[in-house]
Length: 300
Length: 259
Image 1 (spheres, one colour):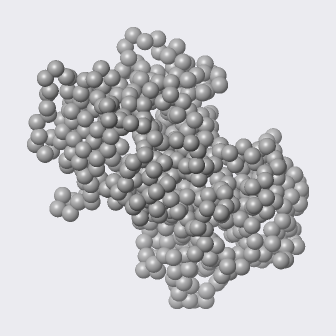
Image 2 (cartoon, rainbow over the protein chains, first blue to last red):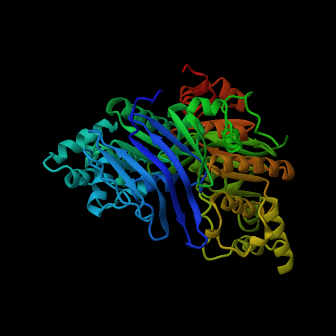
Image 3 (cartoon, one colour):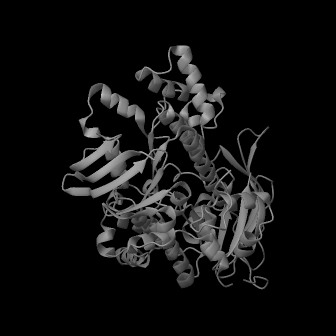
């Protein structure tokens, strides 16, 4: 894909997130740059503790405070109407830029009401464990509807909920809406989470290990759903995973993270065919292969 | 190779639901049999029935030629030493209020192994280094370890009594790929050193293939295919096995396909 003439949907520059004492912080995210273009599936890859999830949480200022601190960086978010959301670190004492002619918002200096809009309307998240993200005492229909009631006034909630459940491939949307989370399988629960994420028609879906807790056959269905949503709705997806097999199958571009830094990036196929960094090579060697012959890592 | 485990026409029922239906398999000493299938196919129930952690409603499980359901008293205790299990979620299977050293030592104490207190402590330290952990960490608590380290602790606990059979129920499914690869290497090393037989339960055929000599495929409580790992993965006969194979993300194929 050639992006020279398109504007990125999201552009992150020099993002820094620290944890622990200010005197000797853990640099969970250490001056990270990345971009996501409209309709693109971008993979952020690395092991547990590499900083990939924290980077993603920082995009909507969801890093748990005060344990974690966003200490620097800039996030520029382009809306569909080409209005810029310029985001700069208030911690650094930088003024939010109110560009002439284009409506600008500042994620780091945003008021909580503005943040809620960003989180609901522009960016949505799905996580690894759908069961723990769903409230066990409400029906899934009610939970999906909540986002619509809060963010989209005047929409027929029940009809919209059923439409969404149908879009994410639940066989009987009307019945599914009345189900409680425990009545659904893990794969169905993840579909419900995706429906909830789509409820406010976001531009960017951040999927943090969305299939790690699922069986391979269900994993395949969920990945197909994500690709399908990109095709149908032009959704951009930031896919966070440690599984390079998944990345190879669905992502357009890849960023490899290690110890808080992005160590390699590029078109998925280029990076995986000709990895330059040792860490990328190590991750590749660790992928279990189904076909024998090409692998070398199975024995010491 | 001598036959260590023989499962004959075993069924497991939970009330009305028949989770395992008429399954037969065998496992030789030192061999790895992979057991694959999706959640709910009955693979864990079968693993638990083999260890007599679940009642069978039909059929027999023979361990070293003897029916495990016939074991009582000392014979049952001996069987519990010889057949052990490692679970998917190591955190859920470790007592959060016991240091990991004490948790492993308890196993030796209950079974009267390892001599006195000093002997037990030494044995625990030895087990810890066997699974690639630093014996200086024995006083730490489960929450102080990473997922991969906890899984090694679960393995040390299972190995404490020198088992002949280890049922490994999705032991690497919750781990990162690179940690997964280390764990697979460790399991293979321990198998060579101790002549262990593994029943390796998983849902990812690529991982199961790395580990197994033979693979059995389960679907809706029944065994639909069994063969050598190469046969099952390269020339699957049953439609479900084919579906399972096509679901595994295939990095080589994905990179080969057209731009």
